[in-house]
Image 1 (tube, rainbow, N blue to C red):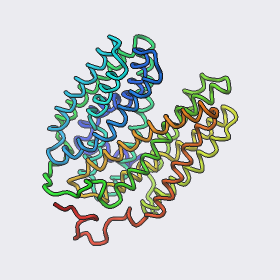
Image 2 (tube, helix red, strand yellow):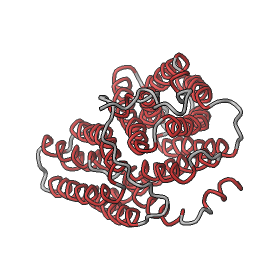
Image 3 (tube, rainbow, N blue to C red):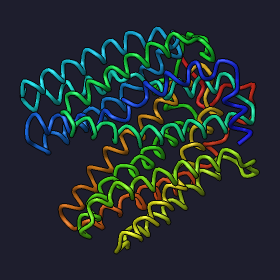
Image 4 (cartoon, helix red, strand yellow):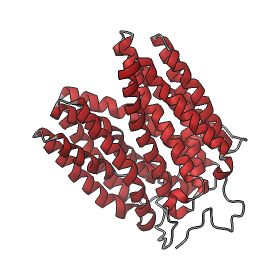
Length: 405
């Protein structure tokens, strides 16, 4: 615990961490909030699923572009106009949903709301990398961020569902709107830890994804995202099939709690194995652990499988962010982090969609087939490309591939 206290005790850390937490809760509420809102407005789960997926895809694709702008011009100059646009988009979506607009219109505005969501989580990681880059405490800081993500994705849906059932989805997303605006504006106004903007006049044709190892990490993070998405569907459908629907929440909470524990343990260990090998091992073990869920014929077995998967997923996420920090130049760090963050979001949407189709066609247990396949393939890809996850041998040379005009 001393390592965590040392990181949290850095001067000015809480000044940006507290508002960032408030701003990140709506990030975890947006997809499911849009799902509930559009279903409430149209009466169609199909339309709601499409609108939610549109928000997730837009967020995954646009997020890295805002990360690039933050690297070039500084976080405040990007966050302030972005949160204004997001507020306008989400406010418009709420008004359209209340007036029962067409599903096509709701989907288009949902995409705008998703694409304009401020990428505060990636910017917090960029601040940690700026302050602690090159020190052993950076891994602890990233472990802390992983636990924060898990906490927000645990608390946010509970808050959202409580407001939606107590009032309506409109009021739930209105609360999210207030939190994201207040949290983002306060975070943008805090300068502690914020990296200085570094204008880059030349970059590779493919952007940051062309840099050494970044695309590989992004693919791995999509696979990790499918674990979250497919487990949400699988746990909900399996508990219902077993006649114990009320157990779905506690089972998924066990997955989240185990992930918190896994991240906590990972952050205090002094690893002697290199990060690329750790990522391959975490993905391999995660694939093996999630296979057990396919054969979970009772709620206690679901608890055990969810706990095993949770313990392993946080170390994989933390290792991925740590690798990204060492692979990319400081001037594109935020953009790289947003690609990974967007990869998880895209994976969540993909995993939920594929798992839902499998449940509808073949039964509840087939939803759990998604995680072992996706993480197993990602583990194989990482194992075959370990050299791509190590920094270029000569630090005096540009990191591969070189940034070109």
